[in-house]
Image 1: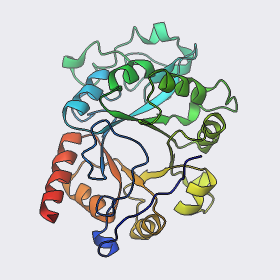
Image 2: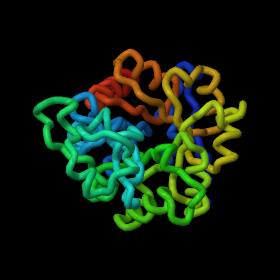
Image 3: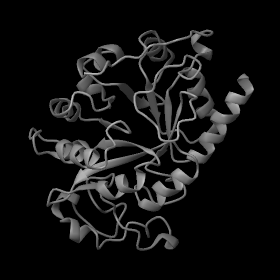
Length: 288
């Protein structure tokens, strides 16, 4: 399989001023719109501060705002179709009720996934993974987060296999990165494809006291994802020393974006990709 670690070409300054960009760390996934700064601006569930999360209008807006990657949440419908929706239930982000897994694709497509956000978004549907990939191909990379409740022991025909099939259909293997809070999902992926980019979403209970390096090695992943609160200076040092790309979520304040950038993250998930892009661009200008 491809190496889980990446070569640092140049070392500059202390950990307080180190970042993946200044170290020329190789990214764990290709970008269609790579500006070669070594940092990835990620639209969290699209541009979800401005549009209903995990909808096509949110993903398109993130792309138009200059995001280099969009993040989405993936689960399965009753009839086994990969759907883009965050919650296990329909209640919060649609006008439906009950578990997503109790409804077929055709039933879910009849629901309104926009009105909860604003009346202007009335009628926005729940997208399928295929619809997102069809849009994203040639434009923007995708972080596919597999929801824990959709993961089973059926790795040959489970959500991982179905998602991977769609990714390969659109020839986006090098432009997507899979992630999950359920470590079994990563294990299932590796049984299916040893080379597909994957990141471990840190979950304390399953980690059993293991550090970043041990987890990345144990699960053969290409990157490590965690919350901004979890990404301490200690973790930053360990990631830097072992050349591990780190992505943090969900950062919407300018001051926190700057802090995470300086701490050395490879990318940030933000509901405001436009603000994040501006902050990162300005910080680069100030370093020149």
